[in-house]
Image (cartoon, rainbow, N blue to C red; front, side, top):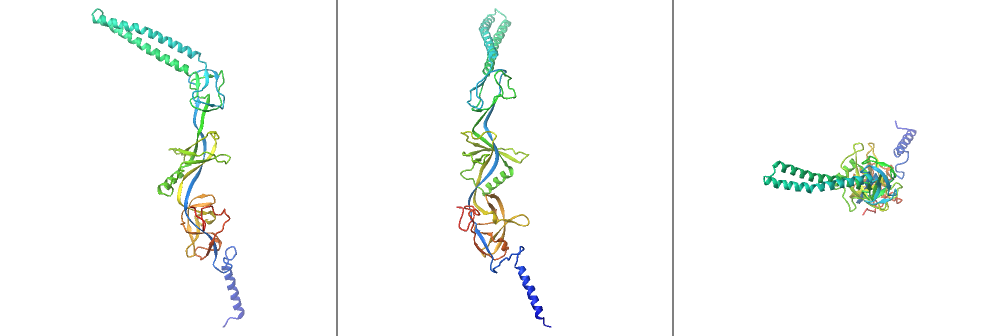
Length: 397
């Protein structure tokens, strides 16, 4: 039997509906409404040197700090500085009552005089007795006693000299002087206060703030990554290696550049990080000890870096970053990427893309890997593509 005309119309209608469903994506929109080859917007990737920096949090630390403590006990007679002022090394800060130390010095000086006066008589007696012993007039025991008395007189002189020196040192400690130059803080004592030698509480603190240290922390994983990149040649040191810029708490940039001083050799087990110390000039003393800052450190230069807009990267079902590129035959290819870091609104790609690749930025929803497409140059608004990153006609040179 031959099918009826009604049956033929039914089959044709079902076929048309099926074709229409195939031509639609999951959102119900046609993949290619015009029936032609899908059109995508692409950028051609190029390479150029790229300077990498990292931002590390830290705090400022005084270049030198001296806690002022007395080295002798006594009553404070005078305080000879203004709190918060700049003091110079050797300036007198406090004066301890020197009366008892002056008396001890005078007594030690007198004792030395007595010892020195006794020494010549003992020396002469020892010489005379030795002559008598040589002439067999006096026994040897007399010579031994005279020699011992002479030696005791010499020792007494040396002991008196040492006692005098100790008294002089103690007396010299009664004026408390500044060991370093810098800005002195608040005083913990006033006139009339009793202080003791080497007490645990400092009288004041002097801090040298020009230059000044900035201590930042860096993870050991980051340190190892940089060492590996430098060793493999993926990262080179530029002319400005070791120079550091500083961002202050109000987000302003400190006008002076710093320089790396050293990296600590001990890892903090609680945080897995090491301390990096940076030195900054501080002539106007804008930086004060204890301020929170962010240091922008130059790591090195990537000789052939590839930057791509973040809109050109998606994730697969495993969460891995991927990008779609157009081959020389205008066929869509999927690339698995290895992303180093984000720089602004771009990704720094270390693996997965090569110079000359045409990266799809727009039109991805209409194509799939393996599809033939019609690539056109992407036209952004000036913010989609950072200057010198990736463009049909712009390189990073």
